[in-house]
Image (cartoon, rainbow, N blue to C red; front, side, top):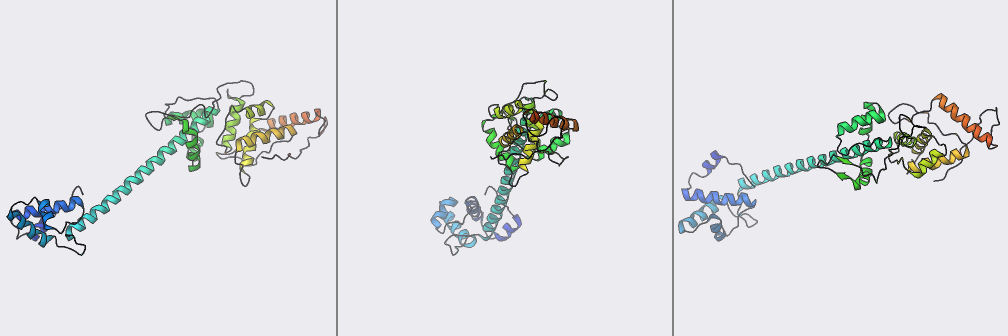
Length: 337
């Protein structure tokens, strides 16, 4: 114990018959009791050492005080009821304080982990659309960039940040194994090797300067696929073959809606969409609309154009639906994964 409570009235009441030397002995023994947080030894010789008793008078005072105020208990040690009570109270306060400190430390650790996970998620969303923020950007600035270039809606960005779960943070711990750390632990940027940004800004087939690959990754992330790569060769091959970014977003949503959901939705969606495109099958368009996780839907004009393109492609290949005929939907070919 680093301190103990002293009640002067009680002390003076209990020690009215002690001499000045006796009071000194009492305090020396009591201080030893509290500092060690345990009872005093039975041996008077040891008590002489504790009280620094040298003369015969000093030793007589030690014997008097020890026998009266520190009697020997069943465990063979000299106890003081008041000292034992004060030690028990102090140990309870210490344990309670340690529990609060541990809780604060745990909460702070969780807060920092969640902040890092959210920063990494915002970085990934921005890099998917070709925007590469500075590594020392503040959280407020990063959020503003996300609203400007990704969601165009602050409430949608806030909802995306609040959806960072423990599973997301465990994934972030793997992604940030190669993180560059600044002075502040919150200022971290993903290693470009782990997440490849798409900085090429093609005007053809792009939306607002964003590449088709970046738009496809954004749509897949909005559909629930947390891990994407706009530079993935299979993704680029799918787009070159004519697979639309919206189709990839719908395919991811389809895979995650299964029971159980697809384990690796990013490669699964690319492979499935490519197979279906090669077979001339129409993509499945989810009926659910609205909400922060809803998939962007093709406009009516886009759907008509896509159907006409696929119909002409099948007709040229001698497939279903001749020129001038009605478009006939075909069943998807099974895709094994």
